Length: 126
Image (cartoon, rainbow, N blue to C red; front, top):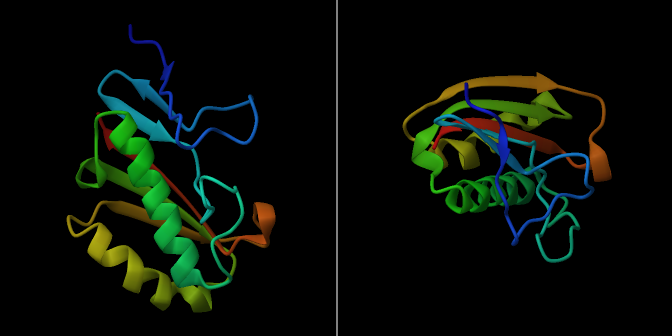
């Protein structure tokens, strides 16, 4: 039986030691939620949903590449957004990055860490 194995991502370390940016289980990768933060500073890249969505997906891509995968292998996306009125602008950025249209859930929540507007997590094949 496969055992979950953390994937090291030196370019984007987790904020603390209670989780991994990604875990491999067999042929699947489970990524922790990603905010639109700059990997070097850990600060939000900007105040807009477009900036934060772009960076969150860039961070996801960075993690997937470290695991030997890529955005084209994403099967499921979970999106947490603080305001559904931002959804059309978020989808404008999201759509071209995931043209294969993985399964997706989007949930509006009251608040995210760093007062971010969006957090994105994915499941992908390794």
